[in-house]
Amino acid sequence: MKLSHRIPLFGWVFAAIFLLFCTLFTYLMVRDHWRVPIYPPDKPGYYPPLLLMLLLGVFWLFALGLAGYVLRFPCVRIEVRPDRSLSIDQRYLWRRETLLLLPEQIVSVCLVESRDAEGDPYYAVQLQPLSSPAVVISEGSDKAGCEAIRRQFAAALGKP
Image (cartoon, rainbow, N blue to C red):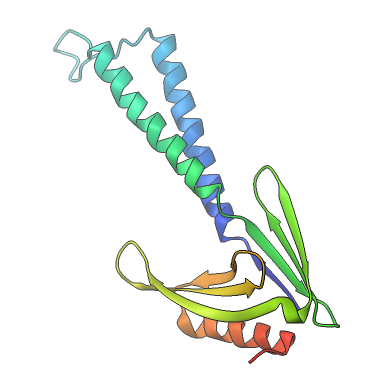
């Protein structure tokens, strides 16, 4: 049995695009010497450069904070071998960690319920190894789907 959890990839791509746009706007501001005409064009003048720098600085802070947050979550690939041992491959943007676990090193496979930003229920299937942090193997807002993955995975491991 093989499972892949690639939802963190969406956050990585979103953060990269946001950083790209911050870079492009910074380039445009520097190229134009921080001179942006006030709209409508019938009013002569430019926005204050300090205001533009502060505004762009806020966007940069948000983009760097977002990137730092989403890069903490790995894309995970798990393989249950015929002898019920596990190979867990956690791929971060800059590194890769591989765990090899025996069935007796698995504490549980559980369904964890939380709330998303809008207050709706959100579910994660977590694998809890004995000596390392929990690994999210699936997540989503569909409880039945997550529970089915949890049952299937637990059955492949021989755990209830």
